[in-house]
Image 1 (cartoon, rainbow, N blue to C red):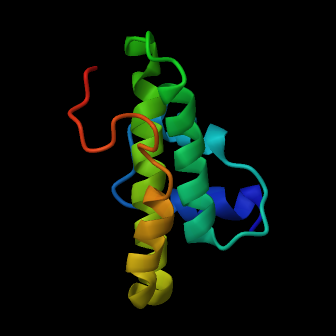
Image 2 (cartoon, one colour; image 1 turned 60 degrees about the horizontal axis):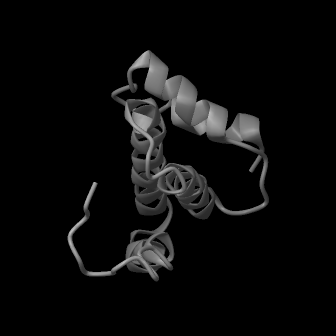
Length: 110
């Protein structure tokens, strides 16, 4: 799906996100051949990775963290619209690799 196609799909979501968050979500979108749900998961994971790579970061990372959450939430919405039976597989892909080597199962110390 093209960047414009993804942005068009996002524009149809209600309720609309606050302006700053919407701009950050749209700014993360790029062209891809992947189906919409998988692409949105990957965009969210990319943003989350950038946040996690800056453990000393502060409030300046909040918008990226919120955008990552929004993108992954939108991925589940897109999957439910396309094929609700695929939600479990999408969840596995969304969670794949998160927490590896970082005290998985332990409380966050942030």
